[in-house]
Structures are given as structure tokens and as C-alpha cells.
Length: 83
Image 1 (tube, rainbow, N blue to C red):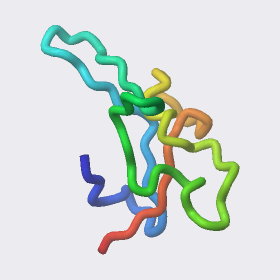
Image 2 (image 1 turned 90 degrees about the vertical axis):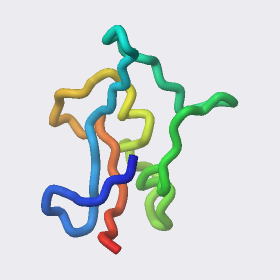
Image 3 (image 1 turned 45 degrees about the vertical axis):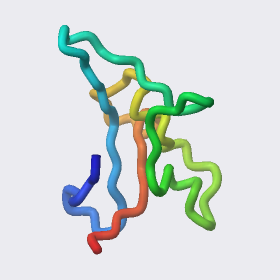
């Protein structure tokens, strides 16, 4: 998936969840860590950016099952560049 636009923020883009379903409508569990990692991002999250290092809006939050929220402890955030 390529994110090509934000909802108006000139500097950042984020998501609060992604779910992937099989043909029967069941959620497919996604692994983001370990030897069989299924998801990567570039940049992975704000902690990949020089000067950041303790931001809790990390890639794993996209798959923590909390998808309808405004709590940023369950969100992912990265810098946005329209180029």
C-alpha cells in the first residue's frame, strides 16, 4: 500500500488501524516482528527519524485490534512528503 495523500496535514500522515480479511470474512492475523515479518514501512515510524526515539505511534499499532479510536496510543505516524 502506498499512501499518496494526507487529510490536510502538510508534514505527517498516520493511520489508526488496518485489517486484512480472508475470503470468508475472517481477520488474517498480521505479524510485524520476528523472522516471518509480513509488514514493513519506510520509514517504519517516527522513531526511525533522527531526533525522535520514544514516540509510541509505531507500526505495530496498525495491527493491535483497536481501529476505531482517537487515542494516539493506538496509532501509527510518519513524516509525509508529497514528492
